[in-house]
Every structure is written in structure tokens, then in C-alpha cells.
Image (tube, rainbow, N blue to C red):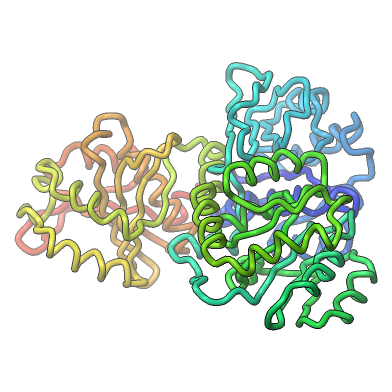
Length: 499
């Protein structure tokens, strides 16, 4: 996957959600060494600036979204860019539009929210909303359906929060209000009015409204007895969410960001396609309901906002449920399918310690290690804690497409190179995962860590590992002596993987 062409629009009518969730895929593609281009209808200046800052080129198209001319422009742009995938996000992606893209010989991923098309000839259909697993998508046998919140697309600013979460044991005084890039019902001003009726100390409200908000919100902010910041552009929503205690949000993609960050929130339906999201979250204990945006008066909003701010046990329960729904790994799950890889990597967490210890003490693993003695649990826990705290070392868990833990890979960095070691879970040996793990390990080293080369050493009698390195494109550099052991040196460089 060297180049993505993203076809999505952002405007006061459509909001910014379609483009911003596609940006997550673009960022992952760029980090993996690829390129990304946004093809969009009459892009505003702020959108061009944001995409340029992210490293995306922007192409403007003037055709009616979803029209035959739009599809032709998309095919032509993809061919000229040499794109390996078209990622289309918007309610213009009806069956005929998809057929036209596919007839151009392109691979197509369609992001869908409510099964709006009569047919789905796309290669991949992605619906990150809860309950989407129950939808009956009409599709070809070879089409992959990626359904549910485990595929929620979070942008790069959220990735650093996977191994840490902000503490929220303080009194709730900071409220985030985020109702989409356009806030079509002008609900934000009513949220400020509702906050005026909440008893207690003054609140701090951050209102994210997009670059094209109206003056009514500014006036309401100036009249408020609380401290109010109106934010028309936010480059790091994750940082903003980490500082807040609760939120009021529209029912679009932002709710999955809030859920991942453990922010309890009141959800509103600001568009028809958000009704099901909002309803599902409320029924399953993931949010409080603020209503349909046109009916969400200041009086109606006061009760749920007051409950959220004043009840710490309620906030804790909503935050815990949100973390269950979204683990932040969705973009890697989708990218794995775009790249055609069998495995993806995630950073090891504290809870992986016993699994790693069990794998390390497997008799076959010990026999092929340079130190063959069994590892006591106490010694392992000390080693594991030191490894997790060491920024020069990275321990990664290999996951298959069903989220099974298949093995582990460690990179010990020294300058611009790293020493690699790995093992496969005994339950998954003999299925060809070793070479797949070494391939994604090299890609991670060069893309995520910006290394120039990876080295590895194998005992001469470990024939299975030697074959895996060779199959994965690592070169044999000769035999060396490590301590009291003979070792075969394997090597792969960034240039070789790029080719």
C-alpha cells in the first residue's frame, strides 16, 4: 500500500467528520512510508492548510458528489497518482458510484454509517459504529466487512494515549463541548445557557465549533458567568480531551475518541445517521442522552449535564464503558487489510507480562535461545518493568485479524539501528506466522521508529527461524560468536524494504 486516494468532503452542510476520520488512515499510511492524497469538492482554505500540515496533497473537484463525473474524476486522480487504494467516505457512495470506481480497475474501501447503498461492490466496507455487525450488507463473496467499534479510526494524536490514560479523580469542573464542524442546530449556545443553571463553583468550558461557526455562540460565551473558550481550530483533540472531566458531543466519530480517552459524555443526534449511534450508546451504558439537536433546549440539556458533572460514580461508569468499546487499535486493524498483511503490531502493556513469560519459558523457545535456563517469575517481572520503562527498547505483540495474540517481537535500539528478537506462541506455530512477523517488524522499525537497519542473530541449529528470516527478505551476513555461542547474523536495511 504505497498510496491512498481519499475521496471525502468537508463543508458546513456535511461537517468535517468524513475527512477527519479518513485522515487517521492517511496518517497511518504516511507513517508506513506511503503517500496520501485528498480529492475533495471545493476545499476551504483551512482544509488545504490542515492537509498540507499533515503531508497530504489536495485535489479539488467541482462535480456533484456521487455523480458520474465525480466517479470519473476519482478514477483519473487515482490513476495519475498511482494510488493502490481509493478510500471513499460520504453518503454519495451509492452502488453505481462504487461500480464506476471498481470498473476503473481500482481497489476500493467504502466507509459506511447506516447501510445507505443498495449494493456494495467495494473490496472493503468499513462501518465503525456499534450494532453494525447485525446489518446485512449486500456484497460480493470476496468483499471484506469490517464492522463495529474495534475498527474505530482514531487520528495520530490519540495513538500516544494507548499505553496511558489521563486520571479523572478530581472534582468535575471542566466541560468540553464538541458538536461537529458545523453545529447545524446551533446547540453549542444552548449548552452554554444550560451551564448557567448548574449550581456550584464556576465551570471552565471549551467549545470546539469549527472554523465556520456563527456569532450567536460568541455572544453566549461572552455573557456566560463561567470561563469559556471558543476554539475554531484544534490541532490536538486528544490533549484537549485529556484535560477535560466531561463532554457534550454530537453522535458522530468524536464519540469514539471520547470513549477511548475515558471521557464521560452527553450525546446528541445532530443528523439522522447519528440517531442509532446515540440510542445504542444510551441503551448500553456508554452515554447520557441529550436528545435530537432541534429539540435540545437549554432546559432539556440542564439535567443530563448536571448529572454528569455532579455524580462521580456515574462518570466513572460511563468512562469504563467507553474504554471497553474503543481500544484505539482500529486504524491498525484497517491498515492491515489495506496492506494485505496477516499480522499487525501493538505495543505490549503491563497486562501482557505473564503471557510473555509463558511464551519465553516454552521448552522449544528456551532450546533455541542463547540462554537456555528457565526464567523465574520474579526475575521476569523485574526485567519486564525495566524494559517497559526503557525508551530505547520496544516490545510488540503480534495480532492476527481475529485479534489473537500470535507472538512477540522486541527491538533494542542503538543509534539508527536495532537488534531484533522474536518468538511465536506455541499455539500458532507451523502456520507461517514467523516470516509474516519479521516482515511487519521491519516495516515498524523503518516506519514508526525511523531506523536505518535491523540486525538479528540465530543459533545455527534453529533451522525454522533461519528460513523465516530468509523468506522475510533478511540477508545472511555471516557467522559470529556471541559470548560462548555461535550465531548466524541476519540483516535488513531500510532501502531493501522500500524496494
